Image (cartoon, rainbow, N blue to C red; front, side, top):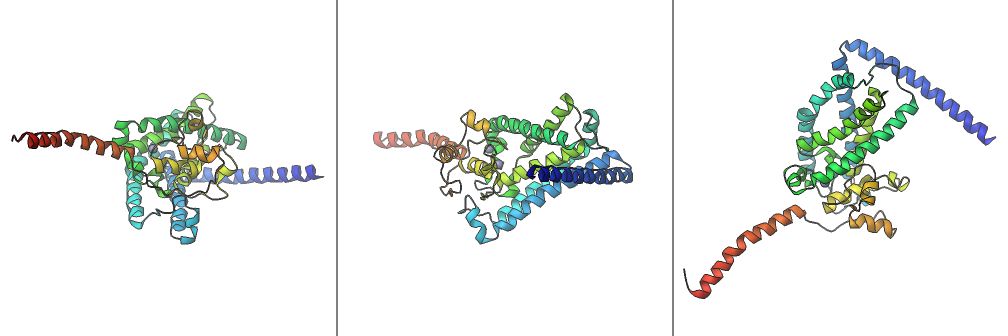
Amino acid sequence: MASNITSGALEHMSSFLIEQRSWLETKWENYYNWMDNDILATGFLLLTVHELAYFGRSFPFMILDMIPAMRKYKIQDNRPPTYKQYLECLRSVMLAHVFVEAVPIFGFHFVCDFFNISYRAPFPSLWTMFYQLAIFFLLEDTWHYWGHRLLHTRYLYKNVHKQHHKYAAPFGLTAEYAHPVEVAFTGVGTVGSPLLVASIVGEVHLLTVMIWITLRLFQAIDSHSGYEFPFSLHHFFPLWAGSDHHDDHHHYFVGNFSSSFRHWDYFLGTETPATTRRRDFKLNPFEKRHEIVEDPDDLADKKSAEKATAPAADSTTYAQTTGSN
Ligand SMILES: [Zn+2]
Ligand SMILES: [Zn+2]
């Protein structure tokens, strides 16, 4: 009886999704025909999806930041973002969107042609889209993990990645607050994953790429939001990183290098001690993290400055003790 009801519901759902898909296919075709320029049609589609996903996902978190009652869900509740920080971050992100991301977005149509990514109807099956999205997530996470470790080497940290670490208590909008080189580098992982699948397996569609970019932006904004809710995904899917994982990266400046998942940091021993402690001792995942940690790069600079001034101090002492000039 129960299985009849379940199979009936599944059939109903699948026919509903097929109906929606063919409706969307018609709209999609009409749009390309109306634009009468496939390069611009693809460019505007990607630009709209990117802007809507980025600002549509980060603004609700901005509103939450203004509601004192929501502070109890903020991991670093002692450091709420200020308006000045929001404005500065918004300005930088907008500049990156115009000067770093717009060119590849409007050039993406040529990439589609080169890698045989379809951009006209029909769409691939839901199963094809689903398994490809899962592969994109795994590939991007791997790229991000190793690339992020590279960005934490002394030279690249100081000259490129340090900008992203300006906010030790991140908020949603900071997801893309980074040096232009880092924005481009991260973009290679996001766009490169579908391109790799397209060149090996084929059958990738622009719609799947658009869904992927949306989900990847949601992941990045969520993990920077600084909010830990009882319904946060990692409570149900423990491999998922979420803000619980990435907030520690910003707080301690090292460790937890991956983006979406936890396996690389777990197996390679690069978790922050706080993340390991919470998991191993099954501690409260909602614990607040209040201590202020200084950027190790700043500490190293201070030490070098102290060392540089030390010999002068020594010679003064020597001069004083010997009575010489
Ligand atoms: Zn980092
Ligand atoms: Zn970050």
